[in-house]
Image 1 (cartoon, rainbow, N blue to C red):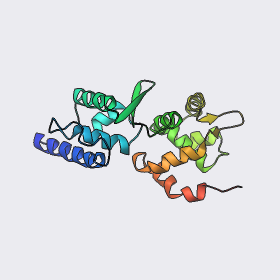
Image 2 (image 1 turned 90 degrees about the vertical axis):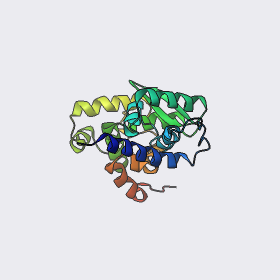
Image 3 (image 1 turned 180 degrees about the vertical axis):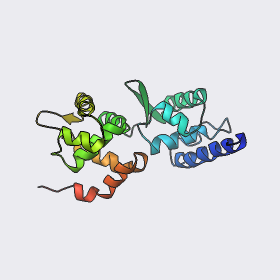
Image 4 (image 1 turned 120 degrees about the vertical axis):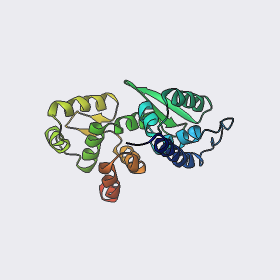
Length: 200
């Protein structure tokens, strides 16, 4: 069982690591009336994991709910981050960095099944719903449910099978932030040169 001191040291190390990322932001050190690394860590975390929702940010940085709320509100007020509602989630992004389409896309890419669908469709634009369900280990109705959500969000067309809207943008988001998405995104990033084709 971890001792309290071990937990505190783990939290400090995590905050320092993301604060170092936040140090490259123009908003670094904006809240130095306190000795907390939390504001800079939050800036760094949001930059490294755009589209993360509140609970994930709080848990990954090992912060309290009130502390996270306080600093994120201040970061939004000071123009370092911005957020948007996404169903039951509030997702956070570096300010003025992503278009509305990209923010919506990142929100869906943070969900395992929709991300798996997008990755599979980038690899094989002709893949069927049945094949998607089999590849992702989910039911056909689950694929259909998420396909409907992706279509409503403007990320997918279902006019003739499944076709991604703005696939180049989706691929770029996955490649740029592959480390924060998981192994399938990292594998996709490694194969990106083969996926992108030039057809004048």
